[in-house]
Image (cartoon, rainbow, N blue to C red; front, top):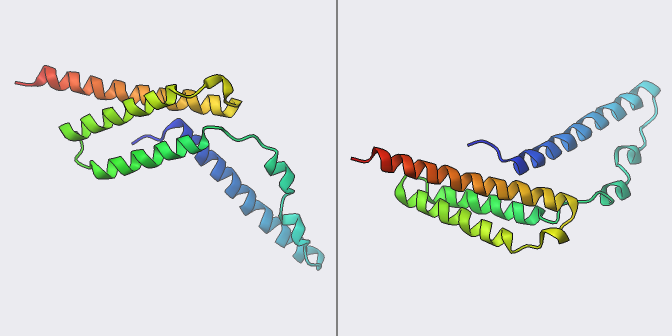
Length: 142
């Protein structure tokens, strides 16, 4: 199953944080051993004001809930391509899209608007793929 765009964004963030953490600690340890002095423990911890000041998506909890619900549903309906699974996945996507349209797009911050568009595109794509597969099945049915 391909990663969704918003999952890719979260993955990139996690990788960036891991890279920052993995490169800062060895550099400080090497500096401490080269100079013979112990490194300042505060140097390894970034100023928290820079982290707090970053804007986060208004829709981040929504995207996380959607991902969790979809994973749960995929575990429940694990018989790939069964009629029950197709019906439930389609109704899931349609319901989420309807709920998403209830939100006021103009009141979201910039990141929230990006997540809104990405989630809506994902849902529309999921519905289109399910509909296309159902049409194919109808055409090939005896």
